[in-house]
Length: 240
Image (cartoon, rainbow, N blue to C red; front, top):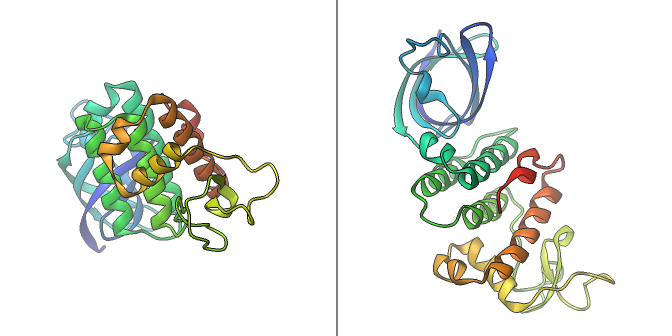
């Protein structure tokens, strides 16, 4: 059977039999892969800890009939322990890997892989607040999937901004002519923060007041749930 090797981040796992696991991986070059890791639940497993959620590993697999089989795993990024030790980071990471799982349902993406690995690394190092890191990740991941929001010009007609009305169903801010009756309006600092999260302006994001961050989080959550039709189950558990 063909053998191949790739870098991968572990999205989720599930038990199989008495000692095995099915591991869902987002790989660098082969998209999303579901594979069996045999014997990893035994105490003496050589690479069980390397195949836990949020871990990044260099894996060797061979192609099976229905599921591939993992034969080797070498750790590249041991982010799992640091993330799971901090509840806000753990809940944010759970929402990230669920998002990546949904966005790569039909095909993989190198950009999605790199974005997820970078976000998990940032969480494990506590470089930014967990909530800000998650919001930035969600906006960027959706943009890569073809749902880039606009927080400057009107997302419907392109009228030059700034605008204050935000309609997630229309793709972001909209001008007065395009805004439906009763459309919610946000203050300028919140809209600027949303743009900063999308572009990675961390100095501005971290300096924003808590209330502004909370308002931006609500918009990001609504935008994410709208475009991911089945929604994110883990998002409701995120520690804000």
